[in-house]
Image (cartoon, rainbow, N blue to C red; front, side, top):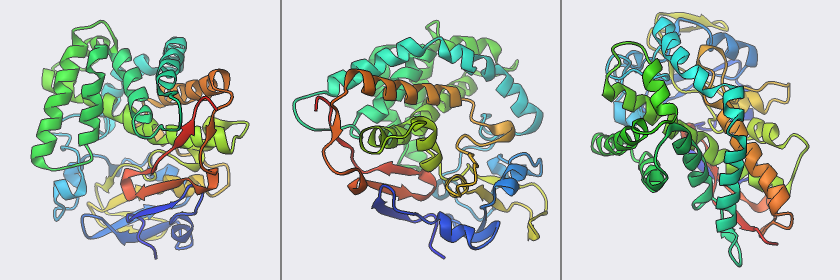
Length: 362
């Protein structure tokens, strides 16, 4: 079987490893990047059961004891640092309850005009004479500008947010500490304003420390960038080279920002689809593979209690860019054939276009 975690450069619509995984059954054993076995769920109905099964937890304290945290790219454990992505059960529900009112479809829709204006400003600035690679800056800067404004981070700090997110690709103790310090500065600046960061501070569970609040804000900033960045590249490519009627949903289904869910670990011995998994077994759901099966399945933003809290922001950002392109840049075009665009598949880090050369003014 092809290694599902290997880095590979492919044409934009070239099949990856999903088909090979699915032929191996509803749950497939593979070799984890940090060593040892990992079980990958490839079936939609089984995946939805896994995503709601209390026996499978997000807390990285349950990772295999042989794993090196840095090699595996693991977050701090829930005991070390609470977050939406590592808490489970009632503590997770309480934290999600604090976030949810800030990111509802109705609340986010109120920012639609402003988000469209940001897209218009940044695409206009990129509309130089000649081709521009929108993957070089726009796809990162746009979602970060949006989330920083929503949270209350001053506009002059967006460059620092861009730099901090770029450094997240290098994961080690020294780099992690430096990046967390940069995000803490951004969070502190946001909390001085009147945006969502201040609202979140007033809603988090009693006893939440300043450091914990800063980490929660880091999670919102980084997740907003990493989710929308890659999707924007595929969205613009499809809009200019191979458009469809339901562009945003189709792009997300075919090119989900996260090919797999974040790690889950078995709290106890578990049997799934006739396969017995030991305690502390790492489990992933193959989002990209399930989405591509052509059976109406769509797990782009997950399912169950850990459904992506920022899904409405991501959807609005993508629709804003598609609408602004159509309205303000009707003559925009790719400077290479759509089919020749290349993406780099980076295992759990997702897929991203290598470059996106566009002539915005035609």
